[in-house]
Structure formats: structure tokens, C-alpha cells
Image 1 (cartoon, one colour):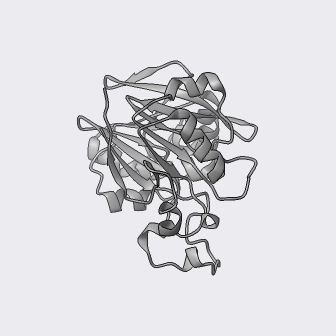
Image 2 (image 1 turned 90 degrees about the vertical axis):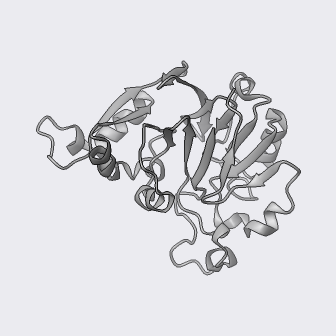
Length: 256
């Protein structure tokens, strides 16, 4: 199983419009962050996790030839704002794109993209099949996906366990029963917003604590704001086997 970080930034991305901090002015590509998303490849099956407003750019950079399914963690715009841009994949694959999300997220997507689901559908709008998921495991082309309940402030959202990979973003709290599902996994990907506490996201200290509890072989932090600091300065200070992810980082993960 391979995973590519398509984006590792927050809802504003980095650089932020008008910001003149050292991170936003940096020319190091590891400090330039599109909105958080990743693509997992297993035996030629491509599963996209979140489809934010940078989706088109991410697909062009990554030269992704097909998408078999999209998993949605939650319906904030930085995670679903690129859904209209799945249209080229409809043409390339001659099929609708399967989208998997909670009942609440599907309702929000249908409200935001009402023209996609209208009875008299606009002819050139994207073709999407929505699949409502709960916290019960399900399969995509024979690949088991196990949703993980995560709190994003007061909002209940989803992380996903795929084989020995756990992908969690926008978390501020994970209850013990959900942590047990991902303990001792091969690879944990989890959000780390900044150094200071924030009510809807783990900060660096909390993310490090969660990494210790989960005890994955390797942990990667994502959904990173410009307030975190320069990539090389922070990454160099992290414990062994814990890394600050960056856009276009590709990792290999045990599946079974």
C-alpha cells in the first residue's frame, strides 16, 4: 500500500494570502501546503481521502490517472470544495465516482452541489454516487475500510483505518474505544495544527501524546498551519519515527 500526501495544510493553505511570516515567505517546497488530502493506492485501486478546493491542482501535480473512490472525513469546504472537479474522471473512466461519507456529510454535499443531484441535472455536472457509511466496516473493491469516530470540536467526523494505516485529520478528541481500533498500527497519520492549543484541532503537544498512545511504527503529522513554524526546524526536533508530513511525500505501508 502506498500513500501520497496531496496536501498537508489547513483551510487557508500555505502561503496564506497577505501573510508575511517566515513560513509563508519560504521558498522551500516543504513549507508550501495545499489543503489536506491524500491518495492511497492498493493493487492499482486508488482511494482518495477528502476532495478539497485544491483537488484539481493536486491531481495535475500527482498525474493521477483514475480515482476508484473518495472517502470524506467531514463536509467542511477545505475537505469537499473540489467535488465539482471530478468531472474529468467521469470522462476518463466513463463512470460515476463513488463517494463514501456520513449521512450528515452527504446531506451537506447535496446542499452545496444541488445541481449535481437535481432531477433535471445540468448536463455537464459531475456524476457522483453517494454511499452513506456509519462506523461499521465496509469494502471498496475488496479493500476493508474501518471508519473511526473523531471529534472536531463539537462536530463528530470520521477518520479511516485501511489495513495497517490510520488516517485522522481535524481531530481535537478521540475516545478510548476508538483509539483501541488503531493501537500499534504500522502508520498513523494525524493532525497537528500549531504549538498553541486550539479548540477544534490537536496542537503539536497533543498530537505527540496521541502518537505515543497509539504506538504506531511511524507517525506523520498533517493539517499543519503556518503557525507551526518552518518544516526543517520542527521536523528535526521530533522524536524518532515521528515526522512532519509535506505535500507530495510518498510513503509505503504494510497492508496485512
